[in-house]
Length: 302
Ligand code: R5P
Image 1 (cartoon, protein in one colour):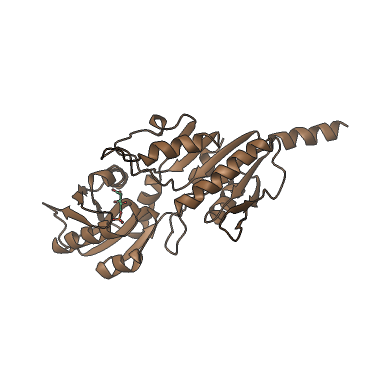
Image 2 (cartoon, rainbow, N blue to C red):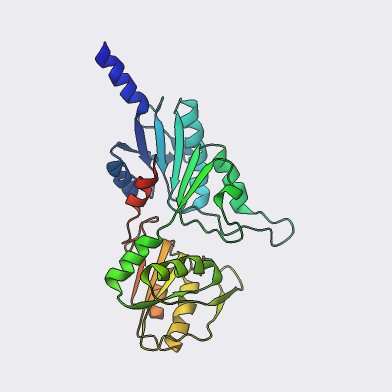
């Protein structure tokens, strides 16, 4: 009887980590580090495109940690709406979303009349279906803190130290470049960790793909440089920065970003532009996601 009660109490307190595509590997690694069980939630689709989703085990009285990076964000948001709401219906005690990459954060102001400010709306939507959000280096610029847009607990973690450690080990004595003012928060912090110099360039976006970068005063002749940004999407920001670094006669150019989306053949285009290596964290898995954030996330899960 006593054993049964102890078992029940144990069950009550147990956390389960659920991984969703594309974050299963990262989720497994987090579960291992916090010593709790792991399950994959497989979603499938009906012929008309509607989702069919089923929890593989009972979630009653459990604390759920759902790990899902928002690549192809529109699909992921719908998936999460169903999962979060259903977890509550089925009696989960707490639902935490670990979104290693949180999409839609770059739209943070109504630039034109009638425009959607997607970061605010997404924060409201997530707040309606989970209890807590944990994310890595969200693109915060004009909105400074997640608490400005989330009404639930939303915690921001940063991969800056992990990136600095990687650079220290692999690209010794390098100078850091942030392609624009928005990236400077990461570039400057990484440079500070490495006790090296950081340059910030000026970027003007002239379309969803095209950017113009202004680089005055880059004193990097014969130096190893690492361009650090939070997101690589089309890769054009990196490519334009590489052109400037080449003009300034850098010896070798490396690119590091936190969230590697690599749309429209970006990886190859950046390599062709002259990057010796392109490395990312594993918030979004890809063949060069060499900087592992699992310990960072595990350490923040209460
Ligand atoms: C925006 O300012 C971000 O920090 C990145 O610089 C941007 O998302 C990169 O986009 P792309 O790779 O398409 O130039």
